[in-house]
Image (cartoon, rainbow, N blue to C red; front, side, top):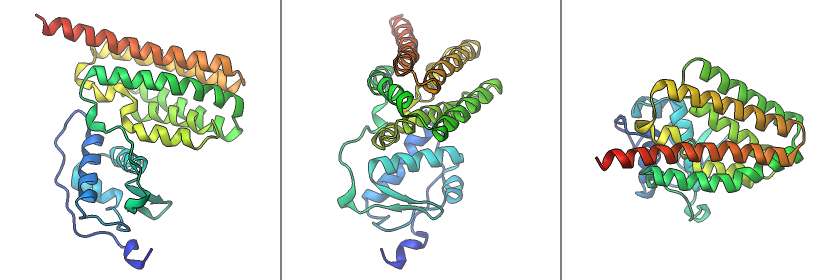
Length: 256
C-alpha cells in the first residue's frame, strides 16, 4: 500500500447524528455510504476516533462498535495503533446482516434464535479450550457488567464484551468474526429501547442477567462443556422469552 494510505482523509465531514434508536447502525450506514460512493477509496484512512466522535456527536463506544461492524462487513481493515483503512473491494465479504434490517421486535427474536444455536456451542467449546488469559478476559467482562448494573447503567457495551470474551475463548477465530458480524445488534435492549419496561423491571432483568452470566462463567471456568451449553441456552432463551412478551403486549395495545 502506498504512502497515501497513511494520511487522514480530509475530504469528508459528517454532520452530527440525530438520536435514532441505534446510533451505531446509523454511523455504520453513513460511513459505508461514503465508502461505496468512492469518497473514501481503498487504502484511505478513516477519520480518527476523536474526529468521528466530534463530527457525528457520538461516544467513543459508538465509534468503536461502528468500526468493528465495518470490519466485519469487510469494508475496512484495522491496524493496531494506526487506525482503520478502507479495504480493497476484492477482499470484501458479500454476506452480512444489515443493521437497518433490525426494524421490529420480530427481527430481534429471529436474531436471538440464531444466537441460541451458535452461542450455546461456543460456550461448550470455551469450556473445553479455555486458557488462563481467556478466563481472565471473561472474568473482567463479567465484573465490568456488574459494575455498570450497580451504577444504574444499561450495560450494553459490557454485555457485548462478555459474549465476545466467550467467543474468543473458543480458540476458533471464526466465532469472534461472526460476533462482530452481528455487532451491536447482539444486545436487544439497545435496539428496542423505546419498548422496554419501566426502570424497575429493567433493573430486575439486569440482575437476572448478572446471575446468568455468573453461571455461564463458572461452568466455563470449571471445564464443564455440557453445563456451559445449558447455562448459555437458558440465558438466551430467557432473553428471547422476555422480548416475545414485550412483542405480545405491544400487539395487544395496538389492537386497542
